[in-house]
Image (cartoon, rainbow, N blue to C red; front, side):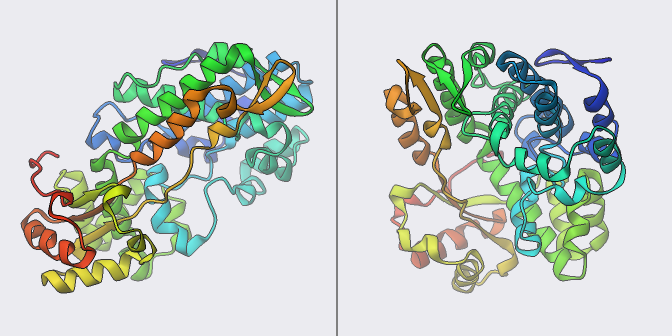
Length: 394
């Protein structure tokens, strides 16, 4: 047995299957992929990696599996799924997904190809585990709810861990209480009445972390910039699958080596010469028809109106998703009901989540005034909806 000191959970114990999986090159690669992508531009302490998050998710999954009294075979499957759930991540975690998605058309959770070759396949074969079973668990099938569900060990760990490393005080979740109050009811993972408050605290944490960390404007701008650099690199002949297999260091070296626009984006991010906000508005200030216009067409239209190179106008129209946690089943007085029906606060949190969404247009500082005026005309924005008075550090 190996004990790994973790700043969030104390000691994480690895042995047998888990230890051998952690030692594979595919897992060790995650040491070089930051959990929060480019968030260290805002929070200098946010340098933690996908590797330690994977260990944390495994630790919580093992605690929950033991609490549920799962047999050894099921514990091994759940633990392997938790440990491997992020092994398919590209460089900078979620920051590069948007750029790679049109070329690869599969998400980072789809890892069956990785599991079927190399050292990982040998380890799984040794312990009698099938790649298809692990993939199904990562997709949330059966006991995979522990790893990938409305409330799961993945969310528990990353909210606590991300809050710890960024230094924000929003990741306070009573994880031990929540784990202790989870049970299986008719094959479905549910939270008992005594755990409703702990489950609600997870939703509160996620709501607060969303604008403060995950969708902080500097994170959004830098992610758009690196995505633009990647697209240029791919259009000039670099394989998208090759980019997906890179770690963070390899990606920046490749962007720099590509020269031109891609190298400029890499330099700007490394030196924190990032673009500025010309437009930054919520749903209530935006014509909803704009959401259906492609980012490329919208950027070109604004560029033409402003007389600026379209490469230096980045449109940020993030996918607007509902919070799934409200659907998590709660077992109260013998009846299973969605968490939102048990806790009135959950419905309020779900509505509040939509209020944090922002549509952005980013550009070079020297082009900002021209882009502001062009965007106002192209988007029919009211004057007070266009953000253009930020300081250089924002």
